[in-house]
Image (cartoon, one colour):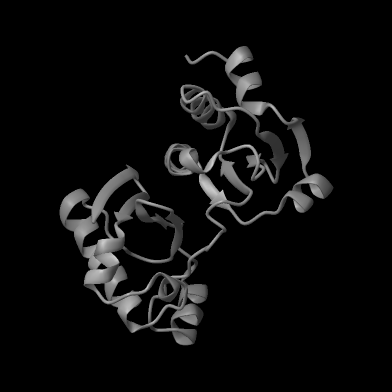
Amino acid sequence: MRVERLGDNKVRIMLTYDDLDQRGIDRDELWQNGRKVQELFWDMMEKAYLETGFEVAGPIAVEAFTMPTEGVVVVVTQLPSLPAHEQELLEEEDDDAEMTMIAPDPFGAFTFVFHDLEDVIRAAHSLHAYEAVGGTLYHYKERYHLFFDEDEVGEELYDTFWSILHEYGELSPTTKAMLDEYGKRVMDGNAVQTITRHFPLR
């Protein structure tokens, strides 16, 4: 298990498949939120606190995805605190914190969302170093979404791509159909090369 702090409110935890085996957790069990997964989650949070000072206090968002060879990446984000009356209602509904994960197809199409264009530019330049091509950039709900079709990323580069993209953005559940319908398409089909060509790193 390896912990990396990504910012004031975010931490990334790398779990190997050996880590899961040692705890008797099958890969499919990760998405079922059972007792063993809950224990693993709090072990991760304790390690994150001891090594990086990241402390769970209030609402959090937990996102996870599997890598074909390396294991599982878990990203925990501390969310803004809810108003007191809403927090009380939330606590009444569920006294136990739960880990809800996104389980995308490891070799399928995927979308990452970025808070601003600078994050997109940095991600594109990092991907370009691996001769990355493709990608469609959308603007939707005040944020930028970078979509990659399953044919644009070779299996041998999936681990690298996802690791880089997660450094600057977050995996998004927003579908391409939703982005096509309600978002604005900024760059179509060759976003990585277009961005690196027109937006040099500062």
